[in-house]
Length: 503
Image (cartoon, rainbow, N blue to C red; front, side, top):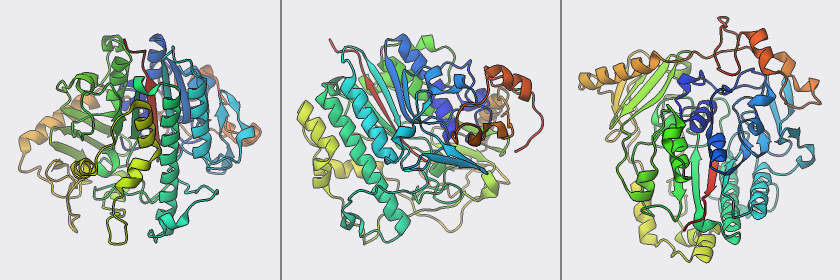
């Protein structure tokens, strides 16, 4: 989805955010709203199956009441931050003229951890959880890394700077250093799973919540090249995420899939993989992909709602190769082509040896004896995963008229083919209208200055109880519905599921 909060709401609930009033921009510090308390989410379902769900890193689904925070939404433990991001060393977050500390262990501020690089801190926590986990019990570990969200802060320990000397642009160089630390984090966590004997029963998933914010607020010099748009938009650069999944349970390894999968699909997919019956999840929008991943069966997903945002007046949907987009966020400021290709003559050739020497590769090979992927196979996979299209100097704007794109043959969304396929446009219009009829409007509550961290030892903490949200704002914290009519005003996620022991 186009930004943080809607993506997380969809991931945890298996429902399109429009059903919960969560389809707009990310929750700001001091904004008294969150994922409705009457919505059951993934960790609660997994606990019913005997899992121990643990969360590290970013939450960003509301914390105005204690009941909206992770320990009260199904997680057994939490070390992380409530807001959209924090600084990497002092863990501070600022909103307007409010600023404060935002790192919590459970419900308690973790002042004692201040000064450690956030990526390393979260990695250490993950390793500790794995090391102390009883293998008899299944584990769900979700690590929402801060990296590489703005601000760009690099590790201050010794780095071999020559490794990044070919990157001339300073921010891109810092970005590469931060990504390198994320690579090391993943390697250490996989090695820890291997040391504990959990790898053979694990599903490891890496995903993103939205496209890179190459420009504008919270820009981090990430690139969606060659795709159009950035975070906040419904173009491919904003919503086409890359995910990777590894497990001995997969039907086919070392392959690239271009099947349509939506963020809502992870709830039923993971629940099914964990041994649950997806019928127990009730009415959700997500589709179970585990039969495909585990057994190679066909997937029923052909159509997906990208979003309907009644505030920004943007909406979009995909059916097979066709994608309909209507409207523009911030008058189309983010709708063009941005970012580096990473493919100029100064970039060193892809180094297969370094891949084989990586923490992840050596851990999997050492603990499971799996053979290394051969360079020829790596080359083939990279070619399959690459998007090939040339950026055009002219392209169709969709802020005044709706656009239909063929995202298979025109993945960079340059040519509006709405006039050539009026029937497809009509069908997608009706699809959007159907979901528009069930849309719950966004609360759009003002910043509550009672949330000012200066009132709580310069720390961001819950400041209301659910009853007060209804009394003060006409907003029901349980359902997410609001009677207000006054309108005032980027990271890697790693999921680890250690399954119940194989027979």
